[in-house]
Image (cartoon, rainbow, N blue to C red):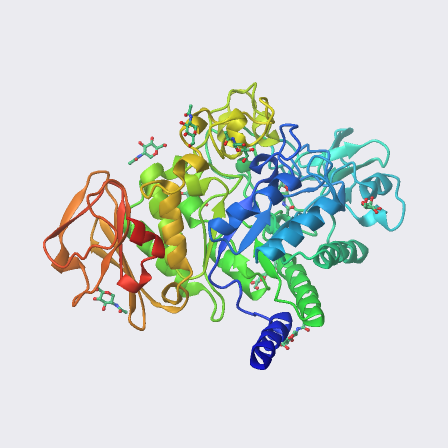
Length: 574
Ligand SMILES: *[C@@H]1O[C@H](CO)[C@@H](O)[C@H](O)[C@H]1NC(C)=O
Ligand SMILES: *[C@@H]1O[C@H](CO)[C@@H](O)[C@H](O)[C@H]1NC(C)=O
Ligand SMILES: *[C@@H]1O[C@H](CO)[C@@H](O)[C@H](O)[C@H]1NC(C)=O
Ligand SMILES: *[C@@H]1O[C@H](CO)[C@@H](O)[C@H](O)[C@H]1NC(C)=O
Ligand SMILES: *[C@@H]1O[C@H](CO)[C@@H](O)[C@H](O)[C@H]1NC(C)=O
Ligand SMILES: *[C@@H]1O[C@H](CO)[C@@H](O)[C@H](O)[C@H]1NC(C)=O
Ligand SMILES: *[C@@H]1O[C@H](CO)[C@@H](O)[C@H](O)[C@H]1NC(C)=O
Ligand SMILES: *[C@@H]1O[C@H](CO)[C@@H](O)[C@H](O)[C@H]1NC(C)=O
Ligand SMILES: CC(=O)N[C@H]1CO[C@H](CO)[C@@H](O)[C@@H]1O
């Protein structure tokens, strides 16, 4: 009895104080798009209480952290990316007390919570902007204001910069008699990071959320934070077939990727490190979003980002890429990550077509599997685990400002609505997302068959395969093992991970018909590997040895072999 007490006591003490500095190095981060995850109050819009009620699902998919897209107070012109109060929750999503309950439940489930942080602008409804218009100090300098250029007696914007949503990036304000900069919607004036008071203000925002228990931040479009201090015109790109005022018609050398961005990020890293040191808590995670070059992305590691998003699966690879394309890009990423940092693999997000739409269903599962067996962090967008696909929208149904402002003929190229439809929980009203039949975006019509409930406990479903590959992600062989990527032939990518006696060996087929190969020529011998997971139609059953003879890789599919100790307990039921 005495000893038992002692042991319990010791465990308690070490739990309370141990800081895990490596907690994020080999995990799944699960992105939740709050408007579309789960509606807790029946108004057709997802909310915090809805998310809290479904946190068990986040734990079930094996994620260590959930990242919430913005829940800040916002007029919702850009669905939460236009913030009118950085330290409050939007009534659509609930209250700060609801947020606290979400954090408390996440703690119980040992989940970390990451907030979106949207630094490039505020809403024009924000009190700071309202005061800035009236030149109230210190707010007068919180935004980027410039005088008009007068050409032939007519008022013109200060330079040729364009908004991401099309048209000039400058908007005239008749009260202040100046233009303000908005790299996104007119209702989203850019914040001025060259102003010290504004800088401190944003640090206070980070501290506010850390005090509420947040474990890190995903910093949105960080490379838009600064613009050229001299406000020089950008030159025209040579792309053809693009309207003159479309964002893509300029080369963005003065409005993106400015050096000061990295300096500001470093100051945030320092703030967060001081915070976790002082409170003896696990280090805070910083994830940064920048659609930019490889080198400028890698540079964010040195400025303090743990996860400079690697978008290769989104913007460099697609369903027509070859095995060699995958090998080249993956090798390059792994090779260029600085020592002590880890790679990351973004499978999908709320700004792009769903992975199952970009790659087709089979190959999407290959991509998810790849993200799991690679070292580092796998970033999964809600719904990818069950294979949700884009829904087609008419122009009239479109609500995303990026789509609406592109107009009737081009909205489908820009709108992000197709990837943002409600999560498909089951086959009842609104896919179990809401009790209301009319939801803020329509539910995809395939929900009757494609939903989480229908995929539970049937081992051939996307979800069960996802869970099996997730279990491998948690193993030491994936966290610490060596990595060897080869082309077994021009159509087959072979990935080997090895750690001690543990082995994972995956054959990915890059052709839309089955490929039959001789086991002895591809499997590493002597082999003690068994079939672990199969993507695509196959006779192969998990747990079987394949030592010789032929192996057939399903069309656009994959076979993962592993040492038998890596089979999850689930396999015993098969
Ligand atoms: C933001 O909201 C909080 C909580 O409701 C409030 O205390 C604070 O004054 C607001 N901040 C601004 C700048 O309006
Ligand atoms: C467009 O510019 C790029 C480099 O900026 C160049 O490689 C390419 O050849 C140009 N294309 C055309 C059609 O001029
Ligand atoms: C930005 O920094 C890089 C090196 O870090 C330097 O080569 C470049 O000239 C700098 N650019 C500007 C505009 O200062
Ligand atoms: C936090 O603590 C670590 C380990 O003690 C130390 O290396 C680091 O310099 C500290 N960082 C800050 C910003 O205080
Ligand atoms: C790839 O996807 C595109 C667009 O979805 C489709 O048109 C094309 O046929 C697909 N190609 C292959 C090889 O699956
Ligand atoms: C469908 O899912 C919702 C949310 O999880 C739940 O409230 C509802 O009871 C489910 N319906 C059925 C028929 O299982
Ligand atoms: C709805 O889902 C349940 C559980 O997955 C299933 O038993 C039932 O047959 C489904 N109903 C319809 C109409 O598809
Ligand atoms: C990677 O695997 C290939 C094929 O099995 C082998 O020839 C090569 O030596 C391996 N490379 C390393 C670094 O282990
Ligand atoms: C850095 C930043 O806040 N970027 C955001 C700028 O605005 C657009 C549109 O609202 C968002 O999509 C970016 O994430």
